[in-house]
Image 1 (cartoon, helix red, strand yellow):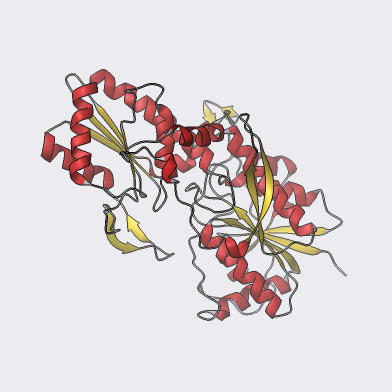
Image 2: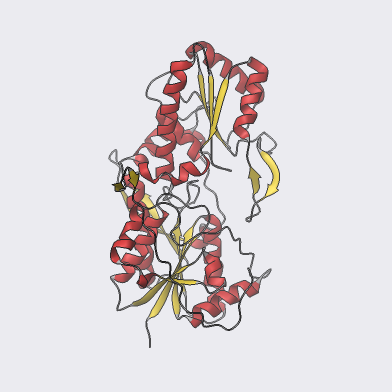
Length: 420
């Protein structure tokens, strides 16, 4: 009986270290050639499987695959394709199984967030119902840090490092000019329902009075009067005010401050324009000169200043996913377990997918100060280990040296195509 092949795909918003997970998957699989045939990667995520567009990673050199460790974005392409329930669109799931059968794929390794965990779980359930042996392992990835059953999510530590550094550097700029120029600076960061990224900006502060002076969390209902009063007090005391605003900041009724009225592919409300809205609010009330910035893609693409801890963990979950599959495990996710004691230690654990899919982990209230505008010491102790170490890429001619893969597709075996 021929060896089973593996299918790996990247899903959702990419990170600066998601390719490290891919590297962990492929390098580990190559060490087990007697048990795993080839590793195919989906071109543009799960869409690649539906369209039977499978990348043959065996065509890539050892050095190219290893170069994924220091290369940001999704090397094989990602997607925001939300698969509906099996009842709503059984054809999509059956198509996946057809493609997997045609290419002798027995391992499904899906690298993404909560929605991806849900897809991985459903594929596992359908393969069992159809009598096709398939081991589905979800590989955690999300800058939002909102997956349950894992201490933190690969991708988050590097974003946290970038936001903390950017906050400190921007604050020094504002402080030096506030006497005669800008008095308010607002940095808008990602985070729809959970304020982990916004919280990481709090690491920029070393002593009382340091920026950020205000952090807006999705978990804390926005109060316009309290916010504006806090801005005024801060400017009066320090001469300037630096604000970190999570894109998911919302009013007491649950409506977003930055609601656009549009929906993305996953059915989530599209957000945008929070920073300029807050800036105008402050201008109208207090007349302060302001500047604002939106971290946007920069925060998740900043491989030049990635966290070494984050890189190590991203590789480890990819490696563990293959090892779990070889152990015969199914419908699980390798997770990061924090050790006890003052010295930071971590290990790889295991979580069942039916407890991970579509569940969001919010910031604990104990991580947010009583007034709702900053982080506590408990939050700092949680966050600081995740940004430790600088995993610099190699540089050439003053620029980071990133790999570009061949991404050679294997010949299609199914006569009929599939529209996505």
